Length: 239
Image (tube, rainbow, N blue to C red; front, side, top):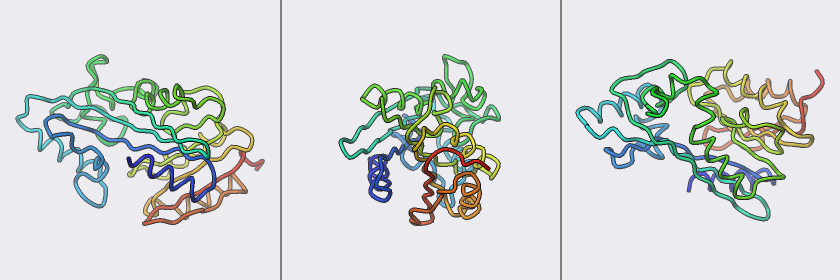
């Protein structure tokens, strides 16, 4: 799948273990759409609001509102490749509800909690999200000593990590992106590595400068189709 492909490419470029995810919304009445096209369902450039509106338009008059958020995590190491899956079942609302989260969160209703992802606190969402479940399943599959985790879930898991891969949300502003970097820097184990996959249109050059203020080792290791991959080694520099 896409997650394994991304992890293999990062591992090949960096020479290190790599973790990648592939996440999306699947809607039963839409035959699984938007699925792997969740981020660009309404076309390019990616637009969360337009994607959400398109799903609601296609769901007009539909009685079956069943939907799921699905995440596949892939970890590639010199010794093995691990894949884990996480899924959260819910229903689609008829209109957006809540101001939190991003993407399809305002229309994804979780019956057990009687609210949408966008109405939950970050702690609530991260404890039950598809990414959190995938990360837990990955740990069960053998990721114990060399701990690796995707950015949306590491904040809710104790300890430090040997590898963190973060991919800022498409419409995230600088404040959100830099907050993600700052949150990750202190969670690296000594000698650990942080990989940031960021779109050029999100301000990759300025993101690199910000990272270099935190890590003397920050450098671009790949520029591919509008994406930059920034690698940082070790813990926060004394600045």
